[in-house]
Length: 300
Ligand SMILES: C[S@@+](CC[C@H](N)C(=O)[O-])C[C@H]1O[C@@H](n2cnc3c(N)ncnc32)[C@H](O)[C@@H]1O
Image (cartoon, rainbow, N blue to C red; front, top):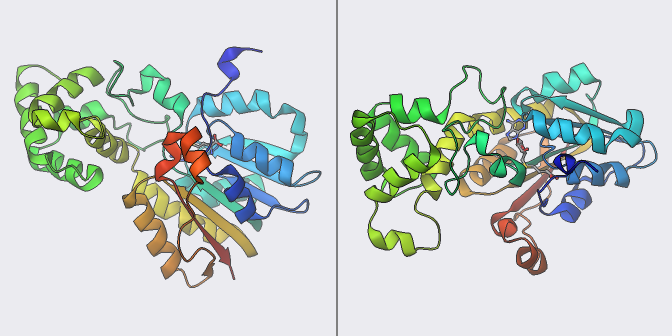
């Protein structure tokens, strides 16, 4: 097997997500976040022999890998490169309206983190891009443009709001003084600037000092919160009565949006009064899962 076609990504809460969606052989399902394909494959298996799965991802590499992996499912599987903010349109164009389930597993995959060209890691050098794919935003915005072009106040607010970073002001100051000398080009250049802005003991904390700033930039570049809100609206349009929506989020900004959007939707019944979380065994086997929360709702 071509190793390039094997995903590094370890999916999170797979069993819980499938139990939430209750796939049947007569059903059609949309996986909005194909990634390494584990959830899509589990949906295909759980809806055998006739259930259909439409998988989308904004990252063309995810589609390339899946086309190889899912060829044996024939017409039961369709893959589309696209942004889930256009979920309704993509589902209608693909013949997936009136579906029985929609799944979103937010954030990025380990394959994307390992892809240096994407510049998502603060530990390895790469260009300050951070787009998951070409359709991540409409204007081609990259992290380099934000870091080198936004005003100080805009930088501080973005880092504070999307990173929940308490040193946002200091980091914005250091970015401004660094870019006066030379354009900030690589991820490790930015990591060094962030390090110079935060107290030394921040380094010994639970997370790397660049974690929150990188999260903020990623959210801004991919307009992650805006796309999530639109995806939930789209899901409500395409779910058939009784159809289920399952969303796995990884940080409080996402979870808050999901919780409020589900609560405010008058056409959804909330199934999970409290979000489901991974089992202790899953967290031990896959530490990345520790912050996952799964919320589920059913269309009236
Ligand atoms: C956590 S991974 C999904 C993993 C997947 N559930 C699995 O079983 O391997 C998240 C995926 O969502 C994709 N993604 C993020 N934002 C997106 C968007 N707005 N539209 C479509 N895909 C998006 C990323 O490119 C990434 O591949």
